[in-house]
Amino acid sequence: MSSAEISIVAAEDFEPGLNASSHNEGTNPQVVEVADDLQLKIIGYKPILHRTYGLIENFYTTFAALYFVGGVRVTFSTGIAAGGNLAYWTSYLITCVFTFITAAVIAEICSALPAAGSIYLWAAEAGGPKYERLFGFIVAWWSSTAWTTFCASNTQAAVNYMLSISEITVFNLDFPADSSSVRFRAVQWICTEIFLALAVLVNFLPSFMTTYNVTGAPDGWNWCLSYLATAGILIGFDASGHVAEETKNASINAAKGIFWSTVVSGIGGFLTIILFLFCAPDAETLFSFRSPQPFVPLYAVVLGQGGHIFMNVVCIIALWFNTAIAIVAASRLVFAIARDGVPPFSNWVSRVSSEGQPRNAVLVIWGISASITCTILPSGVAFTSLISAAGVPSAAAYGMICFGCFFLTPRSFPEPRWGLGKLSRPFQFISIFWNGLVVAVLFSPYEFPVTGEALNYAPIMGGVTIFAIISWWFTPTDAWLSKKHSSHSEEADTSAGEEITGDSKNVNASR
Image 1 (tube, rainbow, N blue to C red):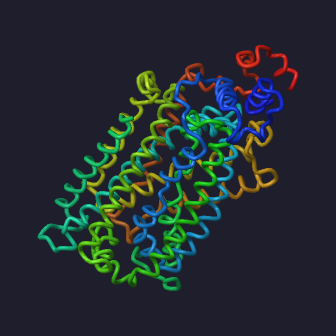
Image 2 (image 1 turned 135 degrees about the horizontal axis):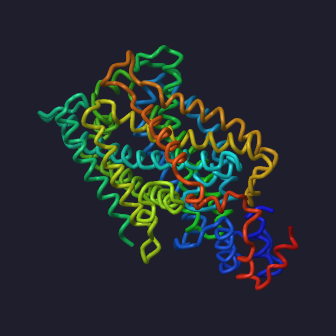
Image 3 (image 1 turned 90 degrees about the vertical axis):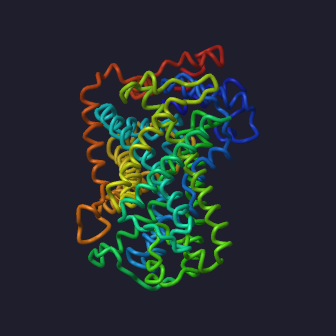
């Protein structure tokens, strides 16, 4: 019997007549919270984060982290450069279909194991008894790298808006406005560090048929590179899973948060792309602006100097808030893997404040993200490399989890309360290949012919994988706390049921 089933049974014993389908909004909040805490204890963890999120708050965690409007604006020129308008909007439609499928699979898995740092636990469970530690350690490092890199790249996106509207390109200031200039990159880096610091501090407070080729890649692969833009808009939907321990009725609401926020973001993103394609000039005019963020001079042309400043200030603020939300999700992930003893200095990283906030994990995110932004200084293509580096580990983790569920634990993975039924295994199989394609695209160089300055540094993520394998090899099995959880939940101590029902017989009898 799975951990999810045990928690449901225990909750039913607490209040007769309550069943799994009725655990949505409107049920007794105390029953739901007790069931959530019981399920967490059965997984092997003591509830220490404050559970204050409902379905709406959980939904908006991923919705805000994805932020499709900003994602489209930030990657718009990238999508146009790789294949043109036709490639951009058609690739986005394909991306939506396969991302929705992947999100549905991840949502189903989240329903079975709703805990902070969920993606890491899901991978360990999907690996089965033989590969649980290996899968867990690799995805722990992959996902941590993805989220910290995303915080860095998203902050730089906001800075690109700011530098573009600070009269460098629009008002023709006598200052370099191209990333090939070291002076420009130095200012870009300083501003990025300041914006990142401000985002961290928040966590301590209460035309459709044309093609284009700028990349220099062969025409077929140039089209495929448009997926760098489209997939980047919708990667990160596991955010709702990372705040699962702070979400009420988590096995339902966190799963819904993952799936529906992705669907809404995907549809909204497509409508935004169509709107921008109708309003944008042809590709040659767009790239003739030679701005780090081509939307800034585009707004200036369409809205005038006063209107464009207002619009871009809105963009900067929105991207900054997007970073702040991403730090929330990232810190919960880092807290969770530190709680299990995976990274160095785990005892310090996993400490939680009296308010139930993993503040030390936030500081870790800040330190790593601030270090990553230093790649701005030596590289003129650091921004696209950051986008790739942020997307590669997440896509690889999604694919690994789906691979494990499909091939290694098809019968032993815990039963979810929010499930896909007969679609579950086909969706898992499709997601393996889709995420493999996304990883290949994100690893690819973005400018051809390839030079040292234009190199895509995303393949350095292979070093993260090697480090993950080394830490897995040298960390004793007994030191990995998630061993309690992944020794498969049916062996879990059901005495937790007594805390709710006063009698564990009902739980045992239900097996």
